[in-house]
Length: 240
Length: 240
Image (cartoon, rainbow over all chains, first blue to last red; front, side, top):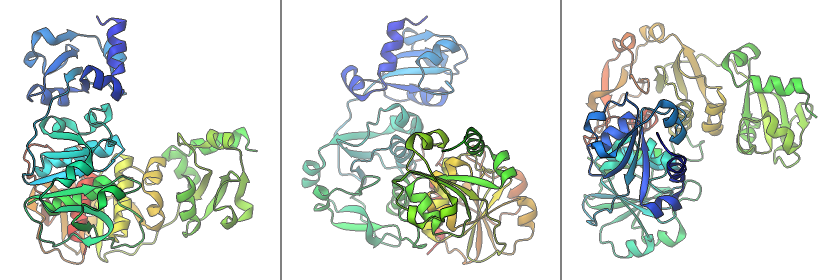
């Protein structure tokens, strides 16, 4: 049984200000919660139906058994999938400058951020720095579209101008008019900056860029590539 | 003024069976309709507010001036954008086998198909063959996410086994266990097959594949790449 107050609290976590205040976020569905149970994230509560496959792996004290109807009342999904977890926002470590660090300058769309996190996991990129205005990585849509990858990941939200002023690796930036990335020799330690969906990399950041790169527009007709698509192609070139 | 019957008819075009029957589809918004007006597609009707920037380029007989309120009644968008066009489904040409042909085997998600069409346009790929069960390219979500690229494009829905049996180029297929695409020499004339989001390339198709390729999973933890992301990386390698 879930109380009205619990429902209200869980739903309130769809807003960033409430997540920041409570230091909690929501993750849903069989696959994602099973990955959570194998991660270092600390789970505060698990609301699961009897059908949830990971039930035996859950810390007993954290589990509340719910009906499908109760689950749908707290879920952000149109088709809730057996389980919803309330998870503590992790205080991430502060190593930096090994391998490739991806930097996002005001990426706004939660689907784009989720997809980018998932592909970083694919390419073995484990460091992601986001500008303060980039969409929150604990936004429910980011959590769902990143699939389990969010839980293997070091994401920091920083003032980019301060952060970049102190960097000693080359800093690559994705620009429409950059040099074709294909076949370029990319150093092992490097930062790659991707800009906002509509406006690209902001003026205040551009002075830190040492190398402008782009994905060649062969067709010459399409105006732009989606930022997640461009990131995937650049990471494919940068990682090996 | 739009009649109730017109509203009903326009809304009915969100379903494939109605589009097929009427041989019409809906495209919306300033940018997309302006691209349409510069394409070879034949526009049946344009419902535009006075604010629509392309008003002077429209064939007068096709235009119905509407209020914002009327527009929102016929629109599929949460924020309608000045114009909605009803467009004739084009009978596409039947050239084949020049350059790269992309083949989609049951891609289901309209957002994925739209993104793939947009990136084909970026990479100068102009031929797309879809299996009969691939999502309809005139689905409203495909039209919106493809942005104007749909109107520069030759898309056919075919029985893939019949089509592929008759192909004389190498046929590459994207597999999780394929050979790393990076650095491979790709012939100029080639087919590239991408499979369904959940199940990959179907059994009945796999016998036609001459080369299995993949995007290397460097991180080794993520289970899969989104099909649009994988397509973008492969096209980046295939096109030059």
